[in-house]
Length: 245
Image (cartoon, rainbow, N blue to C red):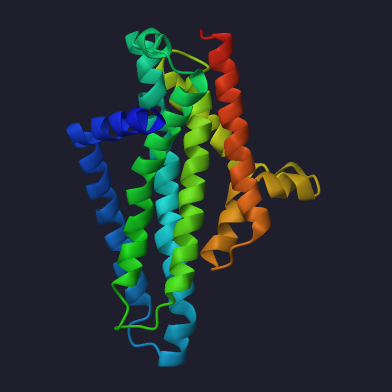
C-alpha cells in the first residue's frame, strides 16, 4: 500500500507540467553551472585541472542542486499532504483501512522518488566528462548520495510542516522557516557567542559538505537518518492527534 500511495503521488506530478518543468529548469541551471566550472579550467595545466576539477564539480553542481532542493521540496511536500488537507480529500484517505503511518510513509516515498531525478541530474552531468577529464566517479556518487539524503530531510521537514496547517502556502512557509533554522543554527558567531559543537552538528550543510568532498562518514549518515525519522515521527503524532488548524 505504501508503494501504491507513492506511485499515485509520483504520477500526479508528471501528469501535469509541474514535474517536467521542474526537471527542465533544473537541467538548464545545472548545465549553465557546468559550463562555468569548465570555463575555469580551460587552459589550466593538467595537474591543476585534475586536482581541482572534481571538487569544483561537486561543490558547484551538487551545491547548486541542494539550493534548488531547498526551494522546491517544501513546496512539493505542501502539495502532497497540505493539498489533501486543503481540498478535503484527507478524510477519505485517512478513512481507508490502512494506518496513518502507512499513508505518511507512502507520501514520503513519493517525495523521495520525485527528489531522486533531481539528484541524478548533476551526477549525470559530471559523468559525461569521463574520457575528456580525470573525473572521480566515486566522489560524484558520494556527492549524489549526500544530496539525496539532504532532499529526504527537506521532504520530512516539509511533511511535518504540512501537518501544522491546512493551507499549503502556510505549510511551505513553516517548512522554509525550519530549514533556514537548520541552515544557520551553527552561525552562533553572528550573535557574538562562541560556536558550540552541538549547534554545529545540527546544521545539515555541515554534513552535506563531507559528502561533497567524497567522504561518506557514519556520523553523517546517522544525522540524516535520525532527523528524517524524527520529523516523520512528529508528523505522525500531529496527524494522530488531528490537531490541524
